[in-house]
Image 1: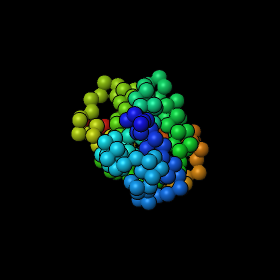
Image 2: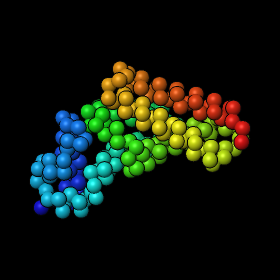
Image 3: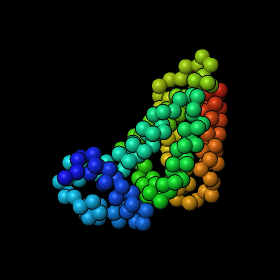
Image 4: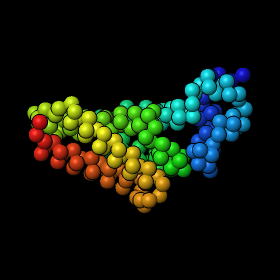
Length: 186
């Protein structure tokens, strides 16, 4: 009998494999369970829902490996790593990113953007104080923009390499945040 962690890893692997050839809604709980030879009970003991499974993958593979390690000294390198990772897993994320507005995944996008804004805004603030409501507004704007652009990129609309995509995003968030703060009036 496999441990809970082994079953979790097997479910994630099977789910990602299925999403390479099927759409999110086509991958049923039964198809996942057939791949890993587990019961519904065993699945729900690990993941309360399919959305939790997606959020766990995003959390483990993007947030923990790339985003939580990001700081002002390695910001560009981490964004490049994120784009390379997304490019390598395009089939999976092309199926998953349309779900970015689901609460669990949206929350992780928000954390990613807040981390970027926190790193970048320190360079541009120069003693200015931004009201909390305005900080939320900026974060929501860039979070929605990033989710949309990533969804379109992994879906094939943009023909950028991973590094081109990351550099364009960095330019967009840097210039947008700098312009906002430069012209900001509390």
